[in-house]
Length: 357
Image 1 (cartoon, helix red, strand yellow):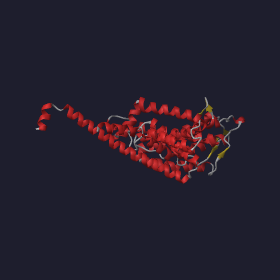
Image 2 (cartoon, rainbow, N blue to C red):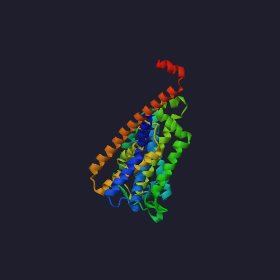
Image 3 (cartoon, rainbow, N blue to C red):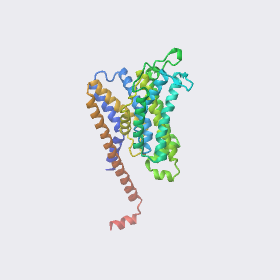
Image 4 (cartoon, rainbow, N blue to C red):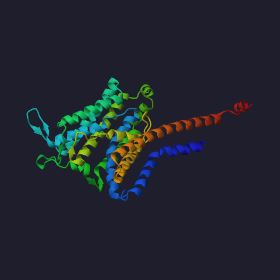
């Protein structure tokens, strides 16, 4: 009986990877060019956007929090970059300063990190629930993005050679060794997230807070600093996504990132991260992002309507949560069975004879 439960546990732990294989298998049959190298490369570039958000979201959810503002932060960061590239930064003396592309990227990333830091500060200093705080920030960031240019876009972000701000398109569409830059960024952040969560004291603190915040506080875990970090890191990931999207489109639109947060949460949940916190891995969230994006792109290639795509995505996410709950219940059963077996094995022979008599 124990071996049967263990077999089911291994299947459930590998469910995201199995789901990805099923998605690939189904669409490779139904869509002739689905498995071509060029198409896989393009889809993986799409995955990078969801995956980057999911990496930041994973760290937040591991602490028992949530960040609903990542899509709006991506949108406003794109607008910040668009404004700096096209209009520059007006100074108090009437002069306008234009920055080169690396400086624009740095300023925008800092801006997104600060927005995430504000989320963490409100949550830790004022005791506001993460759901409410980040929901409010979502509205603030989205409204501010619309106010940036009176609801209009910043178009033609090519820059001007005379101003020294050309080359912005390289971030989203450039390649290195034949691989798109966003894919390299996804891999870099995956390694960073893996290192942070598994190789550093910060990672142990993150899991401890999500597992039992009260116990973590009594154990001396710096709750405020850890939460500030994870929300700031989520803001950094969102800012990077906003830059990538604006770079790919060569346009900054205030509604960029709409519903991105749902894809990020969906990928994180599909990857096995528990919404209650304390359990999950960054690598699982990356596989979840592949499932979400490959499923969406495959449906687009099949001509499935946007309405049905939303329905199917919702069903997949709800199913993932249900399966996660089932896995947790099964895991608890296995633990109880092991403890009972250990207790029986360690019991003295005379006590067993007494119990049998």
